[in-house]
Amino acid sequence: MKTLLICAAVLVSASAALHAGDADTNVALVEQMFEAFNQHDWKKMASYYADNAAFLDPTLGAEEVKQSHADIVKKYSNLQKMAPDIHDDIQHIHAAGNTVVVEFVSSGSAPDGTKWKLPICTVLTLADGKIIRDATYFDK
Image (tube, rainbow, N blue to C red; front, top):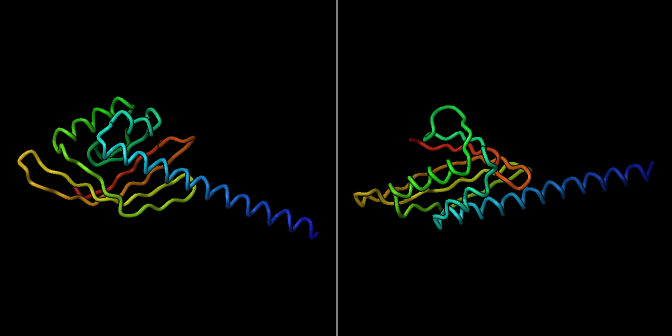
């Protein structure tokens, strides 16, 4: 009985460590993706996503849509044309297993020079080292 309890305790500890490691790895990947965003390296940023990742994003409509790497590069290249100095400043990251929630402030300048800031929350789901779902929320 004592051996069974010790084995159960070891399994619980190992499982917790495994999930914590996954969360840590996923947070690091998401931080790297945001670095690529801030460098305006859209191809590198897209590489953090699975090809045909699911996006729920107000700029893409009310329904979830699939986006290829080429779609992601095109979207953010167009965004950079509208706000050449666009930058995301992470405020908080929360992770549990394969889900990473990022609260950040996006800022930039409109073509007329007007500066803007927009608080955003993104819920990212990861699998096999790639973002497979990106649900982004902000007040349009």
